[in-house]
Length: 117
Image (cartoon, rainbow, N blue to C red):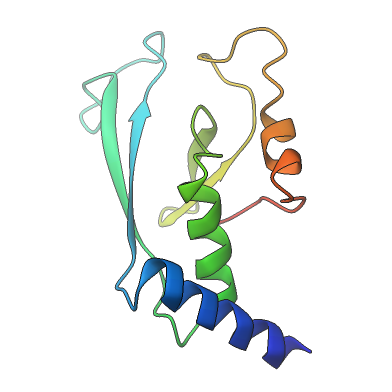
């Protein structure tokens, strides 16, 4: 079953997003109340994520790109974990209004498992 899922995801990935390499550019906004450091001296920045090659993790790459293409991560929180790992998800943050329902966007699109790192 796992091989079939990987094969189906690889086919869908190649058809929709091409052979890669796949990169996602994320514009981030930092909390203006957060103290500035030598690394963070502005409220806005960009993160470029290069995903694994198609043949290594086709399902994960397809799943993530599909969520990004639907703009599901817009307004979500991202943070660095363990130095080289970035985690993102629908956690409320300083930009969220009251009751942002960030999880609802994912569930309405059929994505019930959303944590990526």
